[in-house]
Length: 116
Image (cartoon, rainbow, N blue to C red; front, side, top):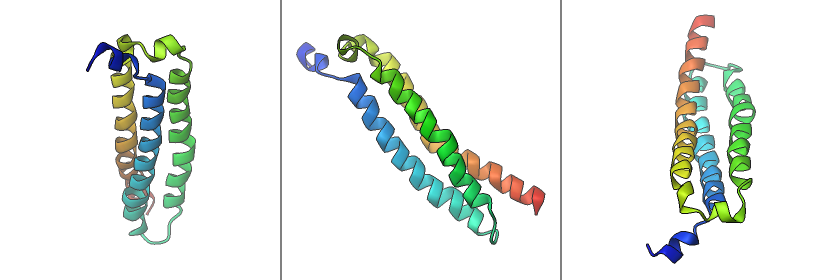
């Protein structure tokens, strides 16, 4: 990549794109993993609790990620020195988006067993 191509990178836009895709992946996993696993236990309110957690936990977390990156100046947004911070935040974002539905499924299935 040439130095001019590196300078054209806008970390704000790249992080915003990852946040949007992470929300889509999280929502799909939430629906298919968490809700699917809990529906097998009969009519329970736990799947609805899982959806409430979606709104309470993941959306504000993503908004904080995006706000942090949107505070960058134009100079900072194109600074190649921001790459390590971008990679770190991108890794954390995807770990949350993929890991939280599975962790939530385990937690709610455990609660279902305790209170069944």
